[in-house]
Image 1 (cartoon, rainbow, N blue to C red):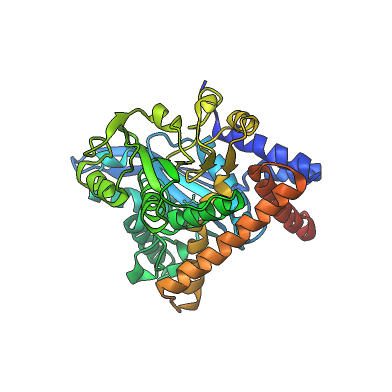
Image 2 (image 1 turned 45 degrees about the vertical axis):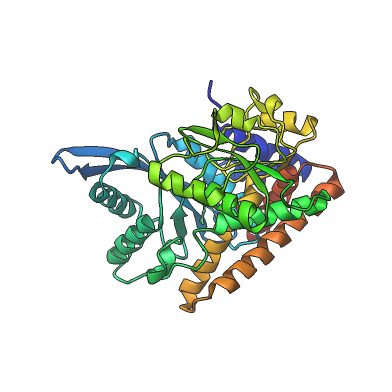
Length: 416
Ligand code: GLU
């Protein structure tokens, strides 16, 4: 049976709850989402027929502030996946010390099979259906799998029309022309690269031509990681895969040319000078750093023993199951967890929201410097706690995150 991401999220919460002796009543609250909406979205298709799509928005917590998290479009979206992802957003925001709780949304659809007009109508109808949940002070969506700045622009526009005023801060990841932030598109990959540099320093390894990297997924996160680790930090990218398959070259793959190839052909497969590999072979490559940057449930109890990387840095949300985590820990493989490693995206989303609320916009250098400062600080807090308590980085990140939310719930108390 497929792993259920929500069950995985509950197990991770339980591990942290035990570690910090969390009061059972707070644990009970955190097991649940505060609010979940399931909406039916009837859309007029280009051929004149009407199709009804299902959309979700789950808000896990608002203990620290408005809820925050992306919206994904995929045929694989399920309610349990969205619930898990919203919970992970709560922890991610708390690790980075952002004044947010977690949320996530999704529409069950295959965006590749939709025209631009259909995609726009679907996005606008979805925004309308959940408009009462949204707002800069309530819940702030952002891009996720298969959604981008254009989708965010449609959400911003539909929301603004609905409430009767242009509201920049209702979504992040927008185009720059309507209140988007410099650096947002590359922020998740850039943040992950800073984390890679910091963990390698701790392990006494300088990132350079001797450092080999394999990347699963070459979309918004994976391709930026490839370019920053491969070009700016000088590492050797030896393998990359996407939904169609993978490519391998022990002498290194040019990350920028690979990106161009993917943009032109739709996949990394067939990139000149590389050997074809499967996705499973990519996960088992002998390399220093493995970056799973695709979807959840990729490293499971079935394949965790095959992993030969020394370090896993999670670009995707939930790529490693709890069972796999235990196996990797036994094998001495260090895992930098998603809620820390991929938090660069929501950190710059936070900067975007702040800029929107103050209508004062920063230049790219300021964004990147603040991102580096924020994520490096979070990394050190997690790393130090892991050392102090002799736990994995994931457990340490959870202990910090759950501890922060729990403190907010404790002082706010229970209403009524
Ligand atoms: N979807 C991204 C994530 O999973 C970004 C969320 C955001 O910026 O709100 O972290």
